[in-house]
Length: 313
Image (tube, rainbow, N blue to C red):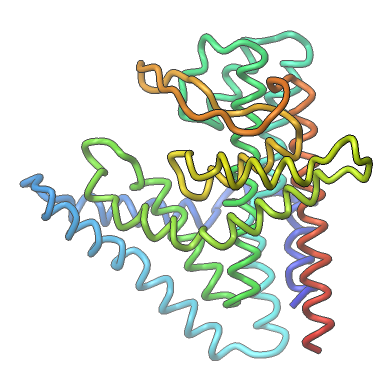
């Protein structure tokens, strides 16, 4: 199992995500088709909740049926090969780091306009007026949160349930990305998608928060970042609007010794979010520090998984 997790990570590091014919493109098309055919003409709350739940099942059922059949009937080399391929397609560490670097490099040169355009691809807030610190803060938040979604949660479900587990997680996560908005169209229609994503991410998010805290640990007593990260996780994480993003970002901010959260412009309205972390505001170099924290956390996960496999052998 450990090598079946390591291999996709290496493939992702070498090649990144496929630039063409990625399965998630087909999944997004299928989700859109289901939505177009099911979204109720009479937009009563109960009708939207019911049809959204039915749509959620219709999206997942064919993919999960195929994944379970393949997992059951394939054996040996072909099963291992497919498992490695599926996990490789489900993770996106290199893509996440590359996006962060596209923000960092022009920001380090003082090119705020380019950095604003790049960070707008990572976050949903209005980026047109962000200064250097706000760009850094937004990028660090996105990298920490998506590190859990795009990397650690996929590894977790693969380790727990193999091919069906990681396929289910990636579909649930994609459904949340497309339907899980708290706006007029999706508040009820996308509620099942949002709740199921919360449920599947609950344990992985907290394991990710713990790994961020451990990854930022300094041995010097004067830099007790481990205690700070755990304290931020427990005291601040629950106040965030997302039950899973809050602990992850709070622990990461505490480990880095920076402050995240705070105000932002979303769809023309100022939204004040709780402050996460402790210490100084985020600066440009913290983007690189956040990427390094993700890598250290990944090493912790691989070490723990190797130890578990050795114990169970």
